[in-house]
Every structure is written in C-alpha cells, then in structure tokens.
Image 1 (cartoon, rainbow, N blue to C red):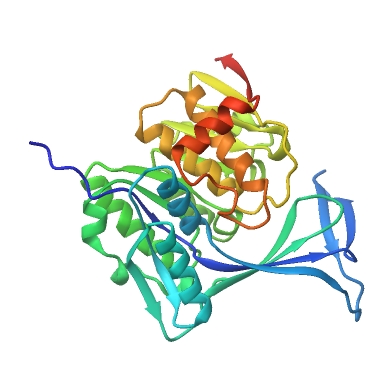
Image 2: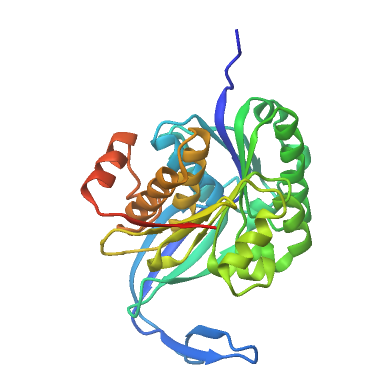
Amino acid sequence: MVELSKYDVVCLGSCTLDNIYEVDDLMRMELIDNEGYDKKYVAIEYSSKLNVKSVKYFPGGSAANIACDLSNIGLKTAYIGGIGNDAPGKMCLEDLKKHKVDISGVKIFDEDSTASSVILITPWGRDRSILAYKGANNLFGPEHVNEEMLKNTRCFAWTSLTSTKGIDAIQKCIDIAKQNKAVIAAAPSISIIKNKKDKTKKLIKQSNIMSLNEEEIESLTGFKDPIKSMEEVLSWGLKYVNVTFGKNGQWIYDGKKIIKTYPPEIVPMDTTGAGDATMSGIIYGYLNNLTLEETAKIATALSAMEISTSGVRIGIPQAYSELEKFIETHKIFQDIIEL
C-alpha cells in the first residue's frame, strides 16, 4: 500500500500584514529611459501632506497567500516562514489557521517585527505601488526548516525571500523535496530577481513549474519578447512556465504550444495577490494532471476572483465548487498557438 503524503503543498516565503492606503492626491509621472522602457512613477510633492481616503489591514504575503488559496479549493497545505512575536504576527497566524493552513513549521522571532507592506491604491488605475519591510521574513534560515514537512509533501512552492539565510532555506527545502520526488513550484518576485539574479536562476533551474509577470521574466532573461523569454526559461529544464500580463491575461507554455487566456469581464478593485492566485491555479492544475487549457482557466478565474475585492484572500472562493461556478458563469476566452 502506497503511503499518501501528509501535504499537497508546502509553501516557503513571505507572510506580511498588508496596510492598504487609498490616496487620491498622488501624482503620476511617465518617463522613457535610455533603453526605451516606459517607466511610471508615483510622485508626492516634497514636504506636502496628503489625505488618505481609507485604510484597510489584511494578512498577506506571497507564500501565505498561495497556501490559503490552495487550501480553500481543497488541497492540504502548510506555510513555513518567519513571523514576529507581535500583534500583526498573531493576526497573520490566526488568518492562516482560519484558512486551515498548517502553521506548525512557522518560526516566531523576538528579534524583529512581522513583515509589513504599505500598498498605495490610486484613483488613476488599479495598479498599486508597495513599500515592503521584510522584518522577520529575513530571519528565517535553513536551521529553521521542518525537514519532516518537506519529506511529506507532493509539492514545494517557493516565493521570494531575499536574504542570504532565506535563499539558503529555499535551497534546503528544494534539496529535501526533490529527494522525495516532490514537484518544485517557483514564484519569484521582482525583488529576488533584481537583488539576487544568479541565485534566483539557480533555484529556478531546480524547479518544475513557474509563474511570474511580464516585468519579472524580462528582468530575469533580458528578452523583451515574452516568447523568447519563455523559451529561455524552458531551456533550463522546467516543464512549463506561465507569464501574466495584467488586464491582457496570461500565457502558459510547455515548449510545444502556448495557451493565451484572457480574463473575464469584471470590475477590478485591488490587484494585490493576483499573481499568487494565478500561481495557485497553476499548481492545482499540475498536481491534478489537468491540461494546459484547464490549468490556465483555473488560474485566470482565481486571479479574477481575487482582484474583484479589496484585500488579498477576500474574493478567493471558499470551496472548489465556487470556482467551478465562476468559470461556468463567466466567459474566459483562449487562443492556442502550436509551435
């Protein structure tokens, strides 16, 4: 008799308290740099005082989000990482428990506070700028990894920890998970790509699947053409890669065909957590042996549901049946390109 794994997915990465500030008085600047890139900036007049329209607090963080999203739709998940011994940390842990995520691998630190993000929501678009403080996330190292959890999971998902200790912890988890034939899912953010590109590439080359956005894959590979970027990543040994393009949808590529999936018509409220929801869909599809088309639809639907409300984990379905109903009642178009 084959012994079943205790977990479907163990996630390592950030767990934060998101502070969402809605501000009407922010200015927007657009510039073209020397290489022809269109750069957009949030601008605050020097020595000025801006009125904040609303403030909301939500537990977030990429790895914690993925663990919650997948738990909601029926997978057994765990989150491992660093939390401060403070009120925001307790709030984050309570939310993880509410989503039935195993937190026995969490390390609580007295040396620093729980990570926090200030997310600025502006009136001229639903894109957001984030001020991120890593806090206790940066204290988690390989010595804190619960090895038994990694030996008993079908999948290990890693997201951005940018400290040297954090990257070493990711590597240790990959080593243990691969020894036990677990799937390795990569969700690197722009912070780890820009700050530790060589180490990021090393981690990705040991992974099976990956999802990231257009800016992240361009920074990772150096190619402006997304297809060339995806081909470069696949040459590193991944099974498939998914790239998101905001309101223009997502492309998933396995080296043979690209599935372009376009999001349904919804009113976006807050794009925070959209990429994590997409990654959750990619992991779900891969672990359940779904086709690329089915996987992409699930990922697109989860992302659309996430951004339909303000705050992460709020719009995500509470059961897989809710996700199915959303897909049935919304038009999600796909194009298939054979290569």
